[in-house]
Length: 150
Image (tube, rainbow, N blue to C red; front, side, top):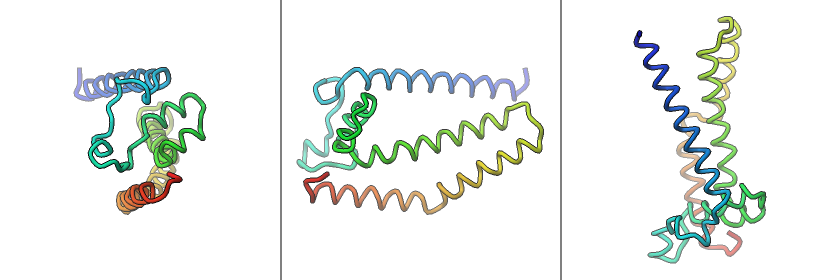
């Protein structure tokens, strides 16, 4: 067995394990309401200060989204609801990049699609993205504690 086969086997195993964890987490959040269950942790920042952190309400928002209650999810945590498509796109692009690397296609096709994925990633997740995300999170944190709408 070559080094490439062992690495591919490890990556496949990790992918399966991640898929199982995502499925289990989704099933848990779909069926159990975090608001009424002691299974889910409470926010220590909120317990200590009475203020809401940027993540407060995210468990309830995910539960609401999975149960088709979009308005309720937006009320619990607008930022999480907005972030899910962004993170989903990143995950999809990474999966597509992985598939392209291992697909049995011509080099021309692989290069064309890999270039498209790379351009998309560089536009959406450029070097300033962490600073932009940090700014949005901090702004959300401040606004949600100053206005009753959040």
